[in-house]
Each structure stands twice: as structure tokens, then as C-alpha cells.
Length: 399
Image 1 (cartoon, one colour):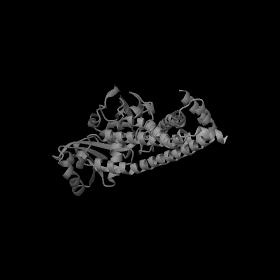
Image 2 (image 1 turned 120 degrees about the vertical axis):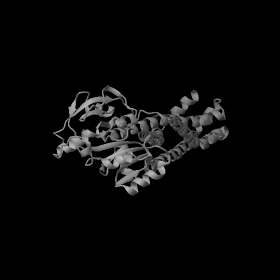
Image 3 (image 1 turned 90 degrees about the vertical axis):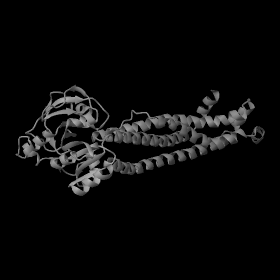
Image 4 (image 1 turned 60 degrees about the horizontal axis):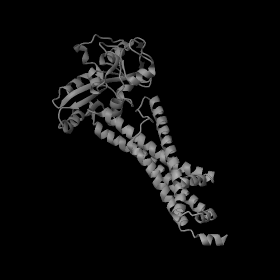
């Protein structure tokens, strides 16, 4: 304990040098912590939202755009597809289930999704209060959407045209029939209603309101269809069948998300590289500082030896200085990494995008202090070895 206390005093005897080394170590550890937290949460979010969805079908365009718009609801869909074609796809023996989605409107930035109750069943959603919609123009709110908009059961509102928020549909009013429990998935930030609600809003707006019925369905459209396979064999033939024989496009979530994660991984690797460079720079700075400290403290080291300190204790003094730096940088680096992640999560929440939080703690974060101690020990080894081999008699004669 006396060695540790003395090392702490020695460390802060040169405050500017200590602060510089602490800053470099902290920045490196914070960068690595930020990458760990964000990449883990984004991967987890992708896996959770994609669970059970084998294929996404929509209008011709970018396959990745279909996935981002239809599954994660963070992009604009390429267009609409005919309801008749979706129903034909539903009858295919390779298909177990089709969940249609009708997009295009929003409420205070939260997307209104017209679909069937199967969409809520797919994500195992439960109601916190109220009931599911029983008729068109009734909606259930995701937990995040309800909290952000202040809407509750019985409240009424008007949707706005466009996913970014445009002109209100003044002729059509939605009523909240229920609020969903939080799931940590994409439904938390959606306003979910019956497909007929979306048709009714847009048919009213364009002055072409028709009574729902089979005779009129041929003219109707949906935006995207989420498909579940009946057997693994469907993965081989169904996407090619859709792309080659229909006016629709099929996108495989597994393929497109892998491609997206590869693109995101480039940014993650860059941040990891920056963190590694900062740690190496910090190690070099700590080495130079401790090497200079040995030369400056020759008289102190000689006095310690005369007072009975063993060579090991003198070397431990240098190691303790480096470990103090590592300990403080670990605490500050972890805190800074979580604060950066919380800031990124706040910005993403403003865009109603993927949920990211700084409150998560990952098992992998235990490696952050280990990495700091390793870097600090590596930097202190040579100065500690020099202090261990100091010749007391020669130092005293030199004085």
C-alpha cells in the first residue's frame, strides 16, 4: 500500500505529463468501448427484427432498400405492388405465410404501417393496455411511439402524407385502440393499423372511396410483403421465381444484411484502428515519461535503497505508476465510451432509427481494463528493469 501511495504521488508530481498520458489512454479505450457497444447492439437489433422473415417482396429497385424499408423501417420503399400478385404468391405451395405491409404515411415522425394481426403475432407483441384494432381507422401504438407522441387509448389523430411528415390527411382520423408493451424490436417505433385503414385514407384523399370488397381489390396495392418459407427448398427457387416471372422483386434478408454489416464493418474497423493507434501512442508516451522519471529520480531511488527498499520494490514503484494510469484510464474510457454510445443512441432516436443505448454492459467490456493494464505494463517494463538494476554506490559517488 505504501508503494502504491508513493507511486500515485510520483505520478502527479508531473501533472501535465500525467494528464497527457491519461488522455491518450482514455481516448483509445473509449473508442474501443464505443465500437463494442454499437456493433453488438446493431447486430442484436438486426437479428431480432429479422427473426422468422425468410424473404421480402416489393417493387423493383434496390434489394437492400426493400429490407431497410420493409423490415427495419429506416428507408423509403421503392414503390407499391399489386394486391393480386401478393395473393398469388400466398397460394404458392412453397410459402407458409405472407404478411402484407402498406406504408407511406406517418404521425409525428413515426411510421403508420397497414398490415394484418399476423404482423403483431410474428413479433409476439402484447398489449400494455387497450385492445387490437377491430375495424379500419383504429390503431395500436408501439411503446416508443406512444411515449414520444403522448397518445393513449381513446386518443384521435390525423396522419401526414409521406414518411418524413408532410401534409396532414384532414379527411381521415385515426383512433388509438391499444398501446403495445415494449419489445425492444422495430414495432416499438411504429403505429400499426389494418391494411384497410391505409386504403381508406388514400382512396378518400383521391376522391375514389369504394366499399371494401372482392370486386375492388384488383385495383388495390400494398407496399411490401414479408414471406415465410414452408421448407428450406423454397430458398433455392422462390426468389428466382418472383424475380423472373412477376413484376415484383424478392430480396433475401440474410444476404442483404450480411452485405450491409460488411459495409458498416469498414467503419467499425476504422474506429478500432484509431483506438489501437491511440493505445500504442499512449504506450510510447508512458514509456518515455517513465524512462525520464528514472533518470530524474536517481537520487530518490538511491535514498530508497539506503532506507532498505529492495530492488523489486523500486521496480514495483515504476510499475505502480503505470498501473495507476491504466486504472484511471479504464474508468474514464468506459464511462466516455458509454456516454458516446448514449449520444449516438439519442441521435438515432431522433431519426426513429435503430435503438442504441449507453446503458448496456457487455461481458466483452471486461477486456478493456485488461488491455489498459497490458499496455501500461508493456510501457513500464524497461524503465522498471532499469530501476531494478540501479547501482546505489555509483549514484551516491556521482552526487
